[in-house]
Length: 477
Image (cartoon, rainbow, N blue to C red; front, side):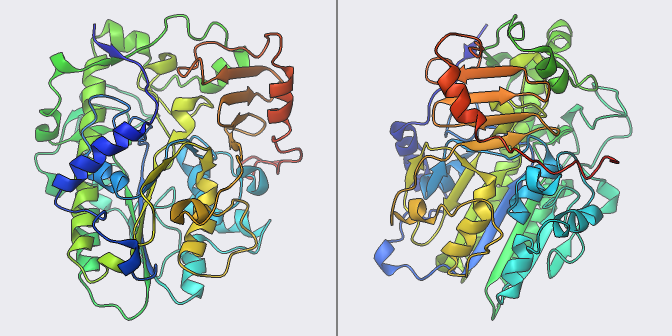
């Protein structure tokens, strides 16, 4: 049985990607810093459920994403980036508000019409697109940008997903593999052409947007839904990954034995397939095939837009930022899901590229919370003093360094993960704990929270857990 282990993000991997980028249809790398114009526009890719198989440029050996790899090779990759929550709603709310879930009380899924009241109750801040608009930017978006798409007033121009496609369609009349009314999960070949896919429609619109003449600087946000379930793509994308060549993630049968009951219960997703079910029904490889095909498809959509940017008048005045809202397990920890505080759920791709941005890999921990202040500084705008994150601009430009700042993720009120440059500490609402040393245990197989000598590490990371988190806005008090 072919299997793989997770590898670190290396300079050699970046060099390999750079070589690939040089053969790509587009490249940012040929721009000299001396001749670049100032940052002016922002192109933001928000990709749904794209896990860290893409983060390290070849972390998973069978990922085929040449366009994202080329983008990474042309800019700065944050290889230890984390979502502030491992689920769409609170992660995107934190990203666009610049506030932590513990500040807003947004710990779970939230409808777009509830987002503004929840944030305005604790802060006068504007969402990132609104802030840019207040400084003269034309803001436009399409697809899944916030959890449901784009709340009213978030953008000056916003185009939702087409009703006939649903949230994550198009879908066949009958599911192929997995029947549950509590999840979109299913996999297989559907529809027959790319042109019917939501993300292709979004990408095509983005290309058209970039061909238009604009007097004002702009923010263009494109929200792609793949590889969110259902893992439906046209057959040609599945053909790229023959089932008999699929390599399975390396998993441990007793991986959950040292996880406290609170952790197992929090991560339980009975509506989703389990690894045991997938193995017994010989569906593990088909699931991986469909997820990899979904990555390849969304990479194609990213490439369409980047090529459109390179062919436009805005190529030398636009910063590109690509991110995912959370990670996803594909059999690790015996599950197929996000919604946990382990590495595969919180670690996400985060790439910046454009004028004045250096080509490098940053292994220090950062968070999606840092994107808002980074964007405003890189665009030369006044900082928003309500932002809870910090600007990563010195790292992008080489203007300076930043101290290590551990990242905090939360899933459900009272359950936290704290991640620094070596350890992941998890504390659940009942006080039970997990601690993993990524230096010796990158797969998070050995919970060392109870071992001797770990008290100082736990105490240091415990001190970063919010002491007075806001009550859950989605639950009656």
